[in-house]
Length: 88
Image (cartoon, rainbow, N blue to C red; front, top):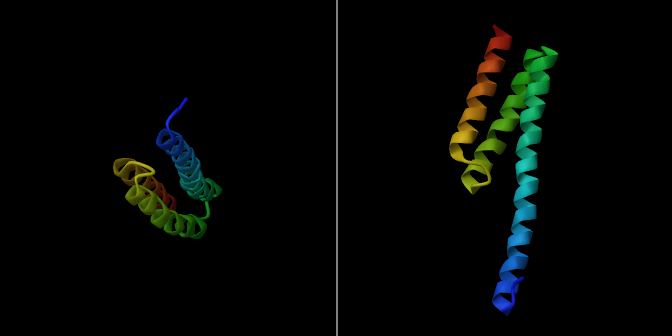
């Protein structure tokens, strides 16, 4: 356990940041699941709409460092390919 005042403060800040980052990661997962659900339903327009809403969220979290930029690119690429295959 932290003994010095600054170490205690750092522990409080780390916990606060961890909780905040967890909620942001959850938001990314929710958006991705929304796109996957729309793809599974077979509705092309719904899937495109969900994808266009998910991309800015994924990019923003990658910029903030919540998720790695390569992971963001991988998710966008795979979802995009699935939406395109659904339209074809």
